[in-house]
Amino acid sequence: MLNYALAIFFSITSFYLTDKNIHSEFDSMIKKSGILYGNGEIQNAITLASNAREFAITHNYEWGKSKSLFALAFFHHKNQSYEKAVPYYFELLNNYDDIGSQEAYKEKCKVYLNLGNIMLDHSKFHESIKYYNLGISIAKKYSFIDLHYSLINNKINTYIDLKDYDSAITALEVTANLLQMNNVVRKLKGLNQSGLINDGLKESKLARTIYQKIIDLEVNDPTPRFTGTALINIASSYYDEGSYQMALQYYEKALTISKAYNEIADIFLVYLSYAKVYLKTNELTKASQYAKKAEALYPEVNQIKENIEIFSLLSDIHFEMNDIEQGKAYAKTNAAELTALFDRQQKLTDIGSQYKMDYITSSYFAEKEKKKNTHTFIWVIITMVLSFLVFRLYQLYKKIMVGRLLRKEMESVHFDLSDL
Image 1 (tube, rainbow, N blue to C red):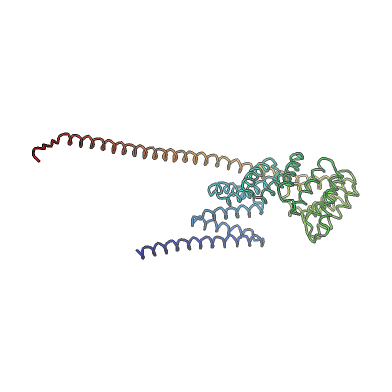
Image 2 (image 1 turned 90 degrees about the horizontal axis):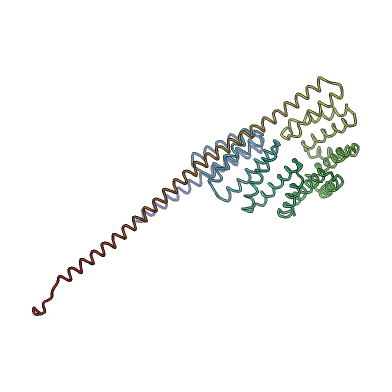
């Protein structure tokens, strides 16, 4: 008996340790893939994450399958391989539903956030809002505060892009009331969004006041994150009003701080804006110089859809300079970039449609199987109950029959007292 108990104990311990070792080895692979990604070795990171996924599948480690799939989706996403990232994200949605834990739902929120961001980057605004809303419903249910904030924050940016300022204001009130506005970074983001909304509503002076407040809040910050953007927004506000000299002053300030912190996207935007101002003031040589500086940075910021504008601007400048051939060449490049964007949008739409069809199909058959299993279970229960009732009835019948038999026997027995 003791030997039997020890055998069971060692068997369980061995299983536990093996399982623990599998998880540990898998976690090590995922951690290394993250380090590789951080060092810029994206292809090696993707390869290792793929190996981790195969390892998880081989050892039937469900959470590991999802974790490695998320790593693959994220690496492809950040590498701008959206056609590879999006199917992985969609596959993850099903995986997390199957797991069903709170941690799985948290990861599902992140997937919706990333899908929303991809759609926003490709100007698919309504699709973007749809994914943000799906994430928000989960974040609210499980009180994922940080994810809730990120989803609403990006949703506000989408409304601003759509010029739907009423919806943006409503969403901004949610972030102000619910989502830890004592956080300085979130407060600065909220102020920037408020400024953009007021700019959109043609309340330029109020918008500039808000942007200046951002600058004042970061004046003593050794690494200001929003000052450059605020200065660009003030300059753009003056540009929209036709106050080009004031715009140039603020663009100059923005360029100084953007160069100090090597903010490539902001530097590109300032060069682009300089070119637009000088085109307006008919200083074509300067306009061309700054547009070419922006063009040189385009490969580093081409994931931002609005930056395609650089080619139409260069085309306009060269036509104004009477350089017709160069103007046509840039117009052709602009058309090619826009076509490429539209192609990416269409591919994302096709991938989304395919996922929906696959999801509906798999859900249909899963539901059918579930109903079949439910019916089988019900019939098993009914059969068991009927069998029990038949058995009980048989027992009762047997008892009655035995009782009747005994009474008959008793009635047939005669006692003759004279024999005693």
